[in-house]
Length: 82
Image (tube, rainbow, N blue to C red; front, side, top):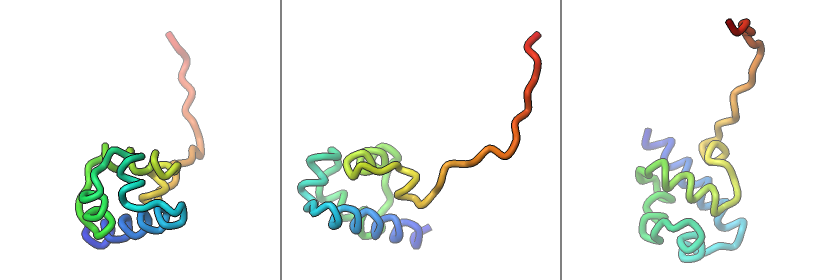
């Protein structure tokens, strides 16, 4: 788990730096305190609300931060409505 959190923190840091945002800038855009952002970037736990807010501020999906793609439907079951 800790390894995944560090990886998430690295992804957030890279995106933040790629967009030339400081911790203060990302904090202002996301509503997550700069102190918490620093902890998150260094592998600390975060809430789903923080994940969503950070993703929105960085203009990415929460899934992309977690490196999770949307599931694909390979087949569908169709049922008649009664």
